[in-house]
Amino acid sequence: MSQAYSDSSFAIRADLAAVHGATVESFSAPGTWFDAKERREIVALSRRVRAEQGFEIQDYTDEVQDIDLPSGALKLIKMVSCEAEKIDKDFYLELVSNGLRPEQYVEIVGLVTRAVSVDTFCRSLGLSMYLLVDALDGEPSKKLPDSATIDHAWVPIIPAGPRGGAPAQALYGETEFVANIFSALSLVPDEASGVMQLGQTQYVGASDFQNFKFFRDENFSRAQLELVAARISALNNCFY
View 1 (tube, rainbow, N blue to C red):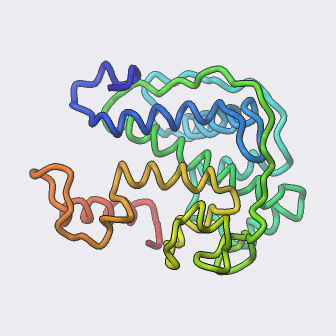
View 2 (cartoon, rainbow, N blue to C red; view 1 turned 30 degrees about the vertical axis):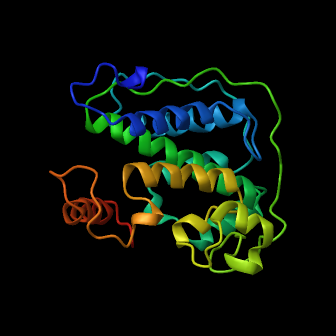
């Protein structure tokens, strides 16, 4: 079990603790378009915003270090953290027209989404927040997928199948169908992968998605899993 979950009165699966630990460590590592200090700051600001808006974070510790971020970053962090259902294409276009690059937009969305996921898990079990580690040295890779194009999302994405070329094969494998929730972040493949790793562990993996007999525990069926997922989505105004 992860050290952060050692005080849990509930049994937490080893794979779940491991993916949460890896997720939090990734926040303080160099990314694709932000360095480690900037990524850590994005997550810390997301937590501050949610704490200020009344979202319960057990034993909240403000870890903001006043690191400079691109124009529009704070506005995006606030929206994804607290009012994601209000984000629309006009909001996105406003940010990119004022200097936030699409690649930066995607990396911020991925970081905040993953942070909210881990923090919500901790809150639901009454666990202390997962503290951030110190930022690592290193520069962002700034690798832009050469097959990324405007398709069914506001931001450029890597198309599945032959159109996506080597980047698609590396991210999606051989499949020619990819769920929108995965491809939407593919402009920054590492963030897309990070979100899907959380989803596969917390919910259900792509290989078992159509297996309606799938379950992780005999006391919690796939039907019950979908009921909880659908109810949470509805409460969050998620159109899925």
